[in-house]
Image (tube, rainbow, N blue to C red; front, side, top):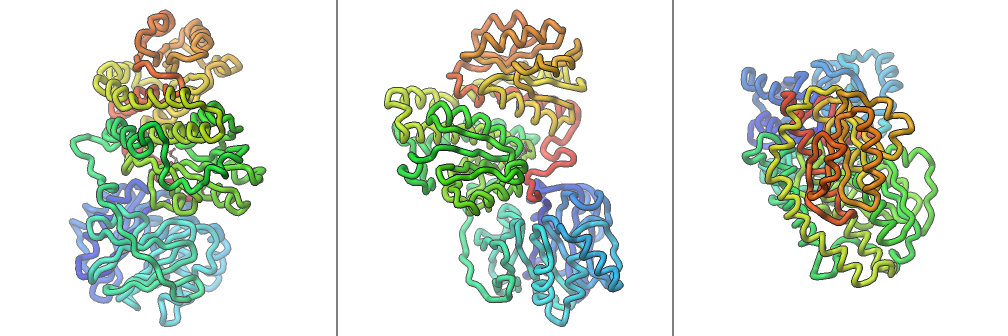
Length: 607
Ligand code: M6R
């Protein structure tokens, strides 16, 4: 998974490419590179490290030319090194390729190419593409690329330029996203819309098995058999893709602070008086009333939101609900029957594992409803219906505002289904809607004074391990709190169901172990309290997240972070906020780049 960008027009290609790459850095930042054609010659710069290193190289050693391609890498095949940075080339460095995806049959292809005398300079899967194009080239770059893509197995979005045909960029998509940007006397291509927003608002979304040839003044579209196809130009909303960091030091902090507005936006969008309304649900009430089983699947943080969603669906709609990790779901030959609804959850809408699960369901004629933030994404486009999260762009690798947004969407959908199924009566329905309206204000309250959480981060940022415990609807909060800490601070953290802890993991507890216990007011508060006592008795350092006014919790806690009172069902939306902040403060105390943690990328577009 990586970000790719291409430009052809009158501007200096490198300046368009570098800005585009910076806007795609969320897709990976192990290495970066560009190739341009300057006065008929293919030249390139590429380097291990973040894009700012490539920018410095280009400033010191500029390239000219009005056509070029660029790449930011998240390594899959081949270590992180200068050689493995894209672009990759044919033997004579006349053809340059950038690629997002994985070529699964690259070993066989490479062996054949080596037998034919091709010399490889990297250990990537991508390099076979350049050599195959060289092998298939017979005076027509499009044809050579077309023949090549038919030999590839796996997923790819590729851009190709060659000094033999310096007036065009050839691009192809199968399984990885690719968008063509249409300009006036200039055209663009990229993995995602934000890369091109400084230049155009008009886009064409390529589908799988589609190709395009970009010239300065036109773009032609084809299928993999070489037939010309017509594509629709769509307009992107600038507002939706505003990606500035403002005065915040990191996107993650900005996004944590945006959560009250995200909640407000969701409520304004989906609540009309006392009615829940979904504009693009596309699933009739009669269909929904027959649903007997829901399968939620998602990855990472979105999976944790799904675990919270199960509580809502089973409580409000009394529908049997399973929650699966997408990468596991697809490969266990799941039972999918006609009365099942799949809910796919994804911030990016481009997560390859989630897309694969969705396609598995569609292939068995199961309806798919997606809860997605990126409304133009692959998941959104391939689903029967969508519930847009409307969180705005989430740039920080650690997902924050999308998570609380996903939970709110699941809450609303479950209530909607509960009404259809006659499980939730009118009075009860109103009772569950009422506390929703207080959510933005209550999140603001938590965010208004973070000094105590900062003090805690001061005390514990040098800890080697953390435990997060929760029960019931806040067990997913424990998982999510641990994930946030792990991914941005590199501190080992484990989330566990508090009741299960005594069945083994409690052996980990020692007097230096911070143990974050999520225990807001709930029906199982007393059970949770007993579990905390078990940890306290073994001298773990208890940091509790509890409801304002809970004095009893102090008996067992070294520190208490209070959150405002809210009904149990909505407590996960509030209890995660201090944990997001705790991770953020710990990571910044450790001097880490929280927006771009090592080894990660925002959008995981490979399986
Ligand atoms: O875009 P998605 O919601 O499909 O992404 C799923 C995960 O890759 C994502 O939530 C990941 O776990 C985040 N880094 C967590 O903060």
